[in-house]
Image (spheres, rainbow, N blue to C red):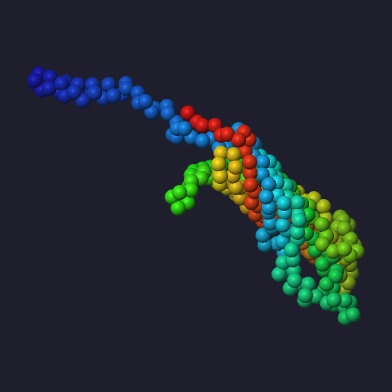
Length: 271
């Protein structure tokens, strides 16, 4: 019995002592970062960009903008930014062409439909867009083209406030919308109104950067500004009058491509 107990003690010591010694030994990589000598392309840097933007899937007009953006990266994954777009063109959509073409040119044979001039006078278009957003960057990395061109990239989600500045497309005598539009008794049709001015809403979307070098990058954004609108200036809720109660929140999808510059122009390198 004593021999067996002595053998057990020796066996336990042979196994336990190396494990204890290994537990006391600290790995040289224990507190090391996941990636060493990493370019901090975003952290505490100012981002200034300019380019072009366009609406997608609008009812009556595709708006084309000159786009500008200013942002500050608080950390490598969190930033705040503001943007503005100034329309340089509003192009007729195919839908607008088809709708207007189906309407009468005058009131010679009165119908419930507006004339072409009445319809186009109250169709609105976007003059400007503005917004501010918080950006979260969960994905970053590096890619190669044909094994010869290498570049850093990132993907981010954005959320904030947005505003669209509308203007009437026609030059006719369309009235501006008010809270007490004129009540129309059947069979007369409510007098249409032109939606104009700045409308506030939600701004959400996604974006990406492709870095050309440490201070220059291409920035793509796809955003949705959800703001109140009445694109045709017509009675939407069926109360026989056209006013601000006919405004409904709708999606305005906008794609933007900017060339951005970072300051300072040299990125920090992690330990």
